[in-house]
Length: 239
Image (tube, rainbow, N blue to C red; front, side):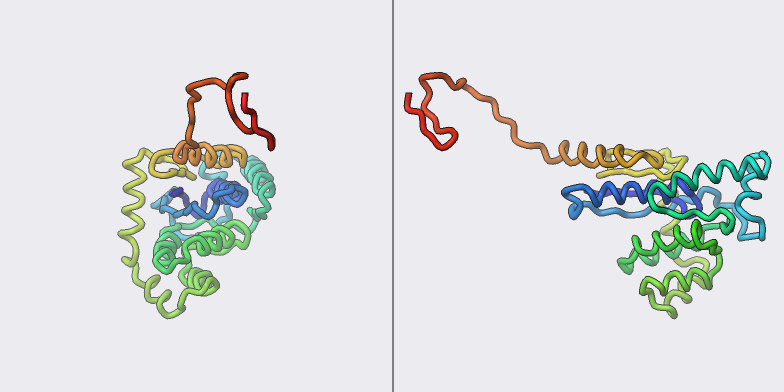
């Protein structure tokens, strides 16, 4: 089973949804037959790099609400995150452009370390308050999962490196009509939108598996009756 996930590293519900999905996968009896890949989606491609304004103030400006109202919204999200053992620290979060982080994820993918890097990027943004547009920060994150430092710096210092890969995935999202994330596609056929509850993810995995791996169904031609000869429960019936 193949699962493609379009997400952005500054999207809280992407992190929450990914964690719920992963928990559902871990509980699934055929988890070893599931592969997950992450696709780029920038919620705001025109976003500036970190300006010094915290996430609560930035959200208040964006949605034209008070700082107190923005903080209340963040608290609700933090409570959802804690339900899947995630510690969101909105006081530390630094809103910024995520293009460099997506470029790094595409590089990590060809090194077979995509899942590890995605988790580190989410954690760096939502818990550790790191600036995901900062190249030094990204090098630090990359080396922490085993990527080679010199090669990392070469990739990240080239503003064109892996941009095509990021853009192609975002173009694919546009063709699929994706305008919100997380957006998950199973086997290029089944869609799950948003950070659904664990039960929804578990049910979806089971449904897809059963539809694509149907159990053989037999239709009995002659019903068993007193004249039938058969064995049952350790005994054989002759008539």
